[in-house]
Length: 335
Ligand code: UT7
Image 1 (cartoon, protein in one colour):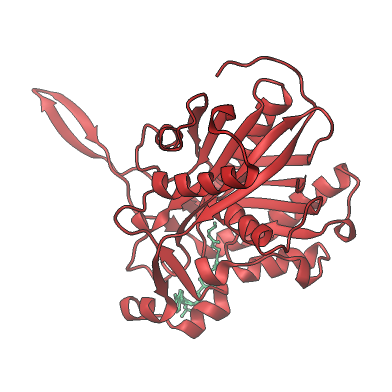
Image 2 (cartoon, rainbow, N blue to C red):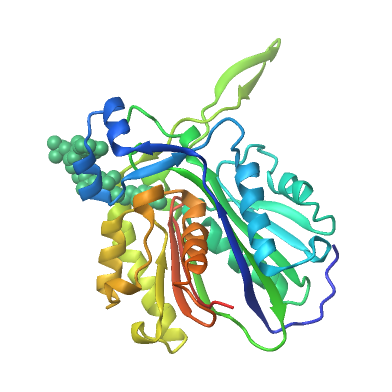
């Protein structure tokens, strides 16, 4: 699809969808694998269980199902979709999993590509897609957040394996010349602190022929300094949201929902507290899914829309944060 430069002024949010794998890994079951307990995990994280991908539940498959549900809610014809962005750190094809989703959907006119920013990925992808729409280059976009971290978790490391799960969520965004429901946003990166949470490549040197060597490809497992990531989140997330609210002339009273990356209930509570949000406004479903990386925000959003918690024109302050380090916030009006 080629850009047309019609210069739309804003975007509106038209639909949502999500998918989680069938296998359920409870705290009780994890306690059989590593030295932990249901009580420890619940009290330190708020997590009770997480979903783990089965054989066919790849990022493409989960992302496809989430995208299809969002398209159905938006009632769009597949041919009218111009752009598909898949936020993921765990593509089932390193060259990109988005085109596979585009093909499965039969969205023949859409350009599709992956975007990687770990747990901030979905938010960064929504903002990226919105720039194409606001510029008038494209009219309709699907943004997906999908991750399968279970493939990269060290299942013998009790400090990290209890946190993560698999899943996908998606939203449909449309250009409009009447209003802008992406009220404001902010994005940040700090590579100096990247080692607090990473998933580096692990290369072995091998010989091609004679004296010519190459590095064989592969990845290690998730490497995390939990305490440092915790401190980063409870310091930076309130700041970035606070500054965004100031910039857009909003305050916590005028916001209907606080939708944070679902990392740890204690982080959600602490950020909510710092920003003076009443607990009923803080959306949380991590007890059921754990941290699904790029999927947590659209998974939570879709659940809250489908059970009619979030309604048309509700104002949502959202923030993604995690590896990179990366973090960001956006203020959106749903609809
Ligand atoms: O998208 C971002 C992804 N990452 C995060 O969100 C991570 C943010 N950090 C956290 O959520 C928390 O730091 C954790 C939940 C990972 C850990 O909680 P904590 O309260 O910071 O625990 P800690 O690392 O300070 O460890 C306290 C104790 C230690 O024992 P000692 O040294 O005091 O004897 C750990 O060995 O708890 C022990 N411990 C565990 N015990 C039972 C660590 N993990 C476990 C466990 N079960 N799973």
